[in-house]
Image 1 (cartoon, rainbow, N blue to C red):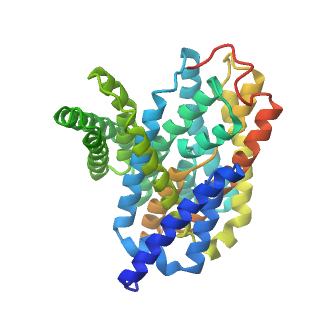
Image 2 (cartoon, helix red, strand yellow; image 1 turned 90 degrees about the vertical axis):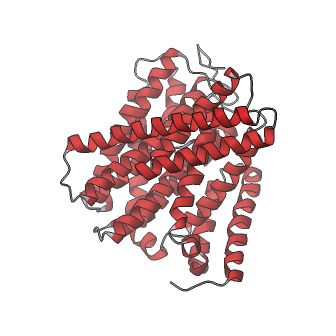
Length: 413
């Protein structure tokens, strides 16, 4: 690898941050998710100036930085969930969308990846695990454009936020099976998955302890209190990932869900911290998408473009409606609300980050077809964000859901 000068490193940092900020400034004016601009701009940067890619600059530190930034993003997503109330029936819908829907996505996407994209079964299952994820960083902006409020919005935000760490953890379990040459039994794979959840929960509890102790020491100082909160998240996520890959995402999400309640218990509020975390998340999303998109080789994208587009169509037209039908079966959601849920399942930063880190590891292991994992994921992310992002507003208007859930009989606060 060519050693870059200090000036080249500064140029790369300036380009990535500048391009990310520009895309995020322009996107709201065009009323589209920023991702629709970030992905092609990052891809173009990788084609035009591959020597300025973040992995070339940071080396082994790049995936570590990605994991920590994604952890902060999920922490912020967890905090936002505290303001989204789910009633009993809606909790059941979310549980089905996450667990049954996740299983259906894993199986269905894996079959499609094998027979349509032509991937070996091991890489096909890896891709199926990766596309389980959705994410608040893409779902929330799209819902904002529609003006959708109430139950459907709450259900979709909870689903997207919970699927991120679960999908990433499933992908890690599949990776471990592939690395072991398929020698692990199904029982061992399930054990690894459950172990990952336990590690995430323990790390989250430790992070909350750090937050509580640190918060008491700096009580009354909002600036240091925010620093304590950020430091606690990074420490907990870092330690969890040290013990078991990707478990830091679970720890960060659980900490985000717990932090506001714990703060209220001690008579404190995290409202002053939210703008800070919002800024960090906005910068992190832009930088990560530009950086990861730049990693995608153009030659491989061209080679897999047709099959990947077809796979994206299957996910959108067949698989998501099936999952939505199963998830909302027997609920008191109106038909229009169920249709909208079937029309919303974009993939986001966690899918791209997971494909980037695991794809590189599989390439290093010389697993056949591993080099196609990131390009296919890149195309699926781009297509799903474009389709759902552009189509959400007209669909919401057609279903008469814009500005609220007019057909709801129950509402979340």
